[in-house]
Length: 287
Image (cartoon, rainbow, N blue to C red; front, top):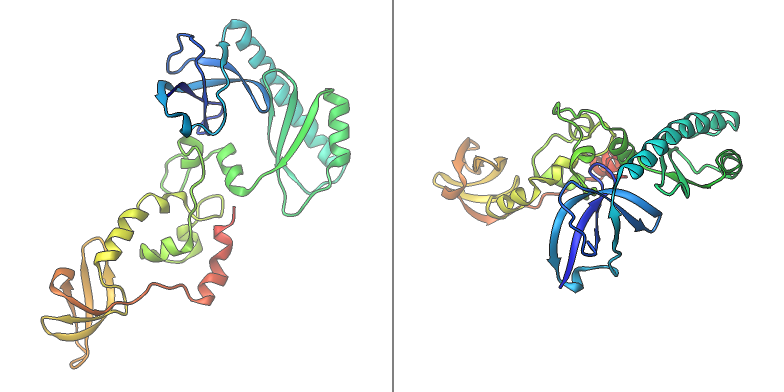
């Protein structure tokens, strides 16, 4: 077993494990640690605990120290540098006439690197831009092209539910979301109904998917052939949450509503996306 703490470097960012190195570290403390990007300051979001050695992807690095007043002053200076760097980079992008949108700038705690995050529709040749930025800031420069989901996570905002974006408040990592989920949940496949502000499928489709999968295992699907108290028929409509089925009788062609427990499945159907649906909505799944 190894003793660890969990540290997060951004709001709703990924949690990384470090060794507390015998320090009296509490939840909510800011700590200085060494990462792959250099020395960083992060917030402790997981208090001391023990995990099995095999659960660790790499050897634990120790916490250097709990952040002090000097560290906080450096962080404030870095924030000002980030603000200045953002303005200068935008000017350089305009000067080079590059088709890219600058989203955010990060300065590592040790001032060893400046990271510029941007979006663009196509690949961008930013080699000359990097040279200009390196000449101005005299430090390592890194430009990273990000997707629209990452852009939404960084900028934040309100979703159609009226709440702050899940990705910018508590989702540490994006979960895979598919058109098939929307289909299985009986949602309208209108892009404006199932996509978020980022223009991709809403992350919240994932939250209830397990429950819907369980319901689908016990509920006849649209197109299923079933035997009802009034005879054999075909399921025309399903309400998964209530368990109610609308069934068209084979003989009378009358449509009646039954509870799923009162229906026997002769041959179940399969939920499928047709080619036109896939073609029209495929872009919603992209990152």
